[in-house]
Length: 211
Image (cartoon, rainbow, N blue to C red; front, side):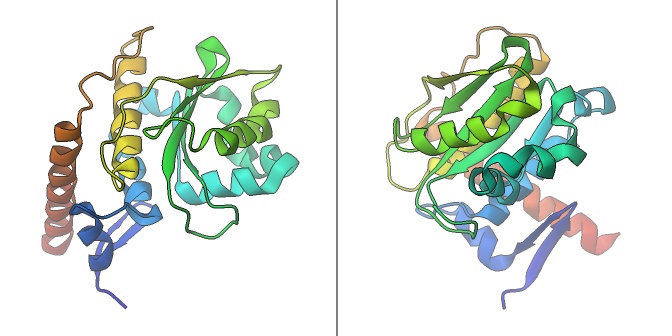
């Protein structure tokens, strides 16, 4: 088994996971889970009360568990959150797998689920199912909308688009922007973000070994 490089919150990264940040690799649950964990930990205490990043494992369970989702998610107190971000995967079963990632976002202010897919239309049925399974948590009947999203220009960057869009939406929402602007998320931006996340992991790993 590959060497453990970093333990960060609930995320555990091995050397084999880190290599996936080099193109043309597809991000797995571990890398996306770490990035979501890191983004959540970067929020201050007040922001943490407003925002929830759900790991890919939790997100996949939501899709598979149907009407049991509200009971399963009760400890997370999602009804009190202003912004909930979770991954969508086209895998049909509860285990890790699939071929495409996208992002589902619940915005309490608008009582709406927004779906951002870098390969438009691919994950819409899965996102709609997840929104349906979660709808009782938020009261009423939240709307659902497939939003315009930055589009990937290759077959492997879907996970990177998920984390880039999630980070941008979180920052814009916390700064009270009603119009979400994602025009800066270009193919070049996404490629550069791969390098930046590798550097963040390297720095965290170095700090943990010297502390």
